Image 1: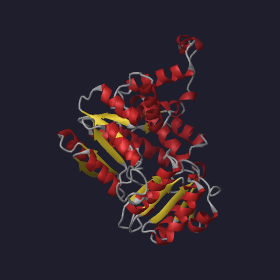
Image 2 (image 1 turned 180 degrees about the vertical axis):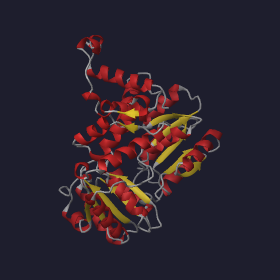
Image 3 (image 1 turned 30 degrees about the vertical axis):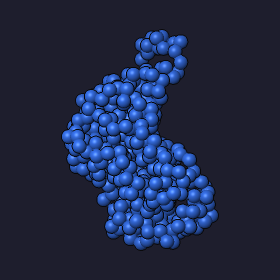
Image 4 (image 1 turned 180 degrees about the horizontal axis):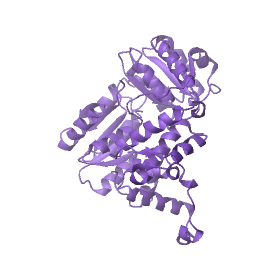
Length: 418
C-alpha cells in the first residue's frame, strides 16, 4: 500500500509527537525532525509529500532554503496559540496553510487528504471499467511502462495507485504532478531527475529526485502530457536504465513527443467516462456519500428515489471527481441525513421570489467582494473546516486555500484552519 511521506519539524514538542502518532495511524510514513537543518536533510535525501513545520522554527527561512535547493515539497505551518503575525508570515512565504495544535485526528486526516492521499479501493462492476482494470492488473506485474489515458476526473490516479499495490514491487510509489509544479524549468528538472552537489548555487548535496526516490517501486507522473518537450524526451531516454517503473497519466496522447509516445504508448489503458459506466454511478455515489459521512463524523445517509433519479439524469462532464464533490456537498446540505434531489442539484430547487434573495445589499459591491464574503461566511458556518466549506461551495480545497492566501495578502482577517 502506498504511503504519504510526511516530515514533522519540531519533534521535541509534545503536540508535534501527537501529530506524528495520528498521522502514522492515518497511514502516513512519518519522520520527526528536531531542526530545520534536519528537515532539509530528510527532504533532500528521502523526499517528502508534505512537511509540517512548527512556528517556533523560522518557517519562511525553511521555505526559502527548500526553494534554493529546488526541493518542491508543500509546507504546512502549525503551532500552539501561535501569534497571528507568525502564521501570516509563513503563509505569505509560501506555506499552503496554518494548522492549530494540538491536532485532532480529523484535522490530520484532512491535511493528508488535501494533498491527494487516501486508501485506494476501486469501485465498479461495469464491463467497460472491469476490462480496463483487469488488463491493467495483468500488465502491472511486468516492468513495462504504463500510460493511463482518460478525461479529467475519470480516476486515473486511483487506478495507478491500485496497479502499484498489486504489482508486487517492494519500493514506494512516488508522485510527480507536472500540472501542480508552477516552478522554473530548472526546478522541474531537479525535482524529477535530481542533481549532483555543486550543479548550481544552492546544490549543497547530491539529490536523487523523484525518479531516484521511486527506485524499486513506481514513479507516477500525472499529466505527463503537460511536461515540456525536452523533459518528456529526457524522461523517455532514462526509462531503459531507470530503477523505477513508470506509470504516467494524460488526458490524451496528442501532446506527447514521438519519443515518449513510442516508449510508454505500447501499454495504454483508456478509462471510460462515468456516463459510459451505467449502474456504477449509483455504486460510486453510495461509496462517496458513506466516505464523506465518515470524514464529517456523521451517520451514513440514505437517498430518496428522487435523488437517485437526479443522479442518473446528469451527464457528469467532470466524471468521478465531480460526482465525489457533489456527494460531499449533498451530505453537508442534507437535513436529517436524507439526501434528496434538492441536495444533488441545489440549483434545481424551487427559487424563492426575487425579493427574498437579499440581492439589494450586494448592489454596488464588486464580484470579488461578494465572492470573498461568501467564502468567509461559508467557512464560518463550517467552523473553519476548509474541506466542508469547499464541498458546499463546489470548489476544490486547493482553490479555497489559494483564495484565502490572497485574502491574507490583502490584509483580510482569515481564521486558522479547523
